[in-house]
Length: 276
Image (tube, rainbow, N blue to C red):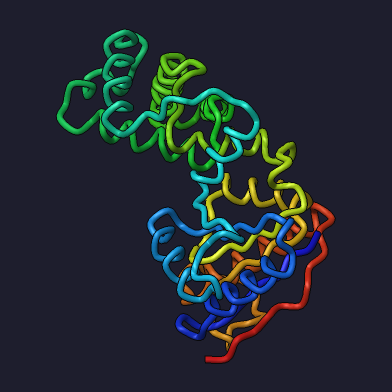
C-alpha cells in the first residue's frame, strides 16, 4: 500500500509519464488489475492516448474509468441490482412533487415555490449537499443552534424539509448522480476487483469531500495509488495559505492526499517532480 504524487507544471508530461509507467507495469504484471481514473469527460481521450502508447495498441491490460464508471463496475461485481439514475429533469420533477405535498411545512420558501427557476435553484442546493456529503442530521443540528439568526434558521429548516421529502421519494431503487460515490464508499473496501489493484488518477484539479473520502478508503485497499497534480515546481513544498494564491488548490490537494495516506497507514513515496 503506497501513495505517490507526480508533480509539475501543466504540459510538462505528467500524463505521458503516468501512462507509460502504467502500461509497462500492466504488461509485467498481467494478473494484477490496473485502473486509470480520470474525469468523465476525459475517458475517451485517455483511452485513445493509451491505445497510441500501448505496444499492442489496445487497452486490454488496463481499464480507463471515471468515478461513476468505477462505481458501476463495483456495483455489478458485488451483485447489486441496477439503480435508476435520476437526471436533472427527474430531480426537478421529484422536487415539484415534494413542494406540492409539503407546502404547508415550508416557512420562508412557501411564497417562492411556484416562482420560475426556484425549483431549479433548490435542486442545485440539494446536489451540493449530496456532493459534499452534508446529511439531513447535520442541517438540522446547525439549524437548532441558530436562535439568534432567524433568517438563516428558517432557510435551513426549509432546506431540511426539501431534503427529507426528496430522499423519501427516491426510496432504495433510485439514486442521484451525486449519491453514486456515497454508495461506492460503502462497498469499495469489500471489492475483490479493487483489492491489491494498481490505481492511477489523472486530470483532476481537486477533489470534493466525498471523493476524498473514497480515496481514503481506497488507499489501504489498492496496492499502489499514483496521482498527478499540476503545480509549479517553484511552489513545491509551500504550505497552502490563502485561496487567492495561484496554486493554492494544488498545494491543498497535495497536503490533503498525504494527510489521508498517513491517517490510513499508507506509505507515502517520494514525489516524482517533472521539470517543464
